[in-house]
Image (tube, rainbow over all chains, first blue to last red; front, side):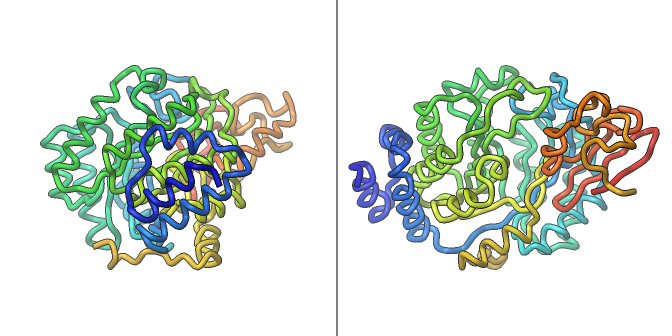
Amino acid sequence: MPEILDQARTQVLENGVGLDEADVLALLNLPDEDVPAALQLAHEVRMRWCGPEVEVEGIVSLKTGGCPEDCHFCSQSGLFTSPVRSVWLDIPSLVEAAKQTAKTGATEFCIVAAVRGPDARLMKQMREGVAAIKAEVDIQVAASLGMLTEEQVDELVEMGVHRYNHNLETCRSYFPNVVTTHSWEERWETLKMVRESGMEVCCGGILGLGETVEQRAEFAAQLAELDPHEVPLNFLNPRPGTPLGDRPVVEGKDALRAIAAFRLAMPRTILRYAGGREITLGDLGTRDGLLGGINAVIVGNYLTTLGRPATDDLALLDDLKMPVKALSATL
Amino acid sequence: MTELVGATAADLWCDRCGESAAAGPHQACAAARALEPPRYCAHCRRRMKVQVLPVGWSAVCVEHGEIRG
């Protein structure tokens, strides 16, 4: 057994203290033959500190495309030659999407907009949309609307948005290679305000943007410092027309290493499978990740791409005897 | 309207990359389309307004109307 796994067994599994950056790096550098043991340990950590339940979420794009920012992985930037066009979702369709999501057994419904930050029109759409959902659908509403002002944070709290997603995307040292229209620190500022407001903080990122293994460890440590309620873990799905459109997808083994490492850095967080898992891990890898530290999934489609049918993921959870977290458990 | 996956014999344009359907088999596009909605109208090559939903999607061409999947 590699020394780092012995150390993690005591430190993380028994004492609930996450690994630091150097230890995460040691884990990310484990040879292939030790990855199953790392996943097994990460699974034990997840079961010990989070339990067997899996939180299921659906997401929808309220405002697609035409974004003024230049996040190099994103097909919704208006600065690239991506074929994604700008489109708004109307309130009845938003409510219908929430109903479809609730039917899967999901307890979370995240409303996302491709913007630098919300303007008055978007906040109005949110106010009406969240109220309409709450009147008709039994589900928790989360939001992801970019960078916020204090006033907007307060407004979202008032609307009843219980969790706010704002991904740091990658570590601080690599961020300028991925985004040039705003800074990592600006994102951190929004996350601080969200935390202080009482909303739950959801913050993760994307692996495979060209970051080094060292930078992946740096990212895990920075997320651990933030201590978010939830960490969505995406794997780059290279999008045509974006600056990262020709990057290779993350190797399955590296994705699984990262899942184990992020779990061992953050033993108590909700670690969610987000975009890209279908092409990076496939069906078998998806299963391995759920047995290696993941305890939440986005089911159904993503914002501009499609996912596996929700029924496939729910059948897998059933097969793994992992109960879907009930709404009562989230309140 | 029936969903069309990738370029078919009746299409003039590939609905994923927007290039001529006759220019090649577009196998990579067809494979990618398993996890992507169409982006270009297969009849006129216009970029469509696409809304992805948790279950399904819709794509609207201003000239040829809406398709759903």
